Amino acid sequence: NAMKYATTALRCWLTAAALLLALCCPLPVFAARAGAVLPVTVRTEGAATDAACVVSITPLDAAPAPAQASLTIQGSGTAYFTGFAFDAPGDYRYTVTQAGSTAAHTVYDTHSYTVTVRVTSRPDGGLNTELWAVRSGETAKADSVKFTNRYDPPAEEAKTTAARPAKNTAAPAVRAAALPQTGDAFPVEALAAALCAGLVG
Image (cartoon, rainbow, N blue to C red; front, side):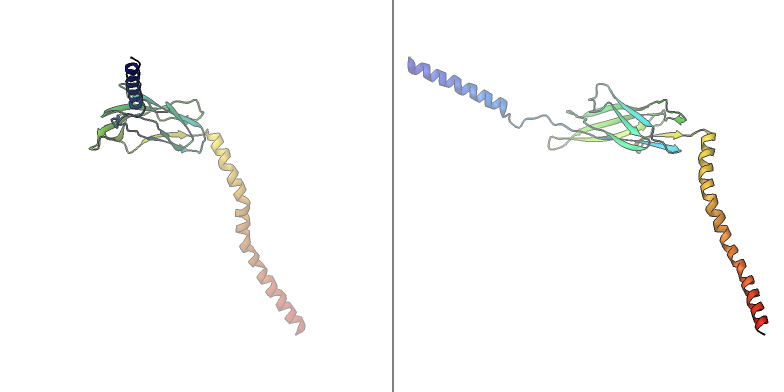
C-alpha cells in the first residue's frame, strides 16, 4: 500500500511539474504582433513663434490606441505617435486633428487627417504594416501628416520690429556712404604741394 501510494504521488507530482513547465515555457505557437510609428509635422508661417500646438489622435472602429493620445509641438517641428500594436491583419483607421488654441495672432490649420494602418500577413507568419493618410477635403494620399499654421503680429508691432533694425543699420549705412568723402583731401594736398613749390621757387 505504501508503495502504491508513493507511485501515485510521484505520478501526480510529475503531471503537475509537466503542466507547470508547459505554462512557464510555452511551445513556439505565438500570436504575431506588428507595430507602427506615425510622424506628425507642424509648420508655422509668417513671423517666428514658439507657441505650443497640440495634435490629437482618435482610434476609429475599435482600432488599438497608440501610447500617446496627443502630442505637443512648440512652434514648428515633428513629433511621433508610437506604441501601436496590431495582432491580426486588417485596416485600422485613426483621425488626427490639431486642437485650436487661444494664442494671439495665430491662425491654426483646421484640417484633419484620416490615417490608415494596413496590416498584412507575411509568409513566415509575421505581420507587415503599411501606413498612409488622407487630408480632409481631399481624396489622394497625402505625402505626410502636416499642419500649417500662420502667426501674424499686429501691424504696429511689425512696424516697431521693422523700425528697430532700420535704425540700427542707418548709422553704419551713413558711415559707409561717408567713406568716399575722404578722397576730397587730395586736392587740398595737391594745392599745399603747389604752394610749397612756389615758395621754394
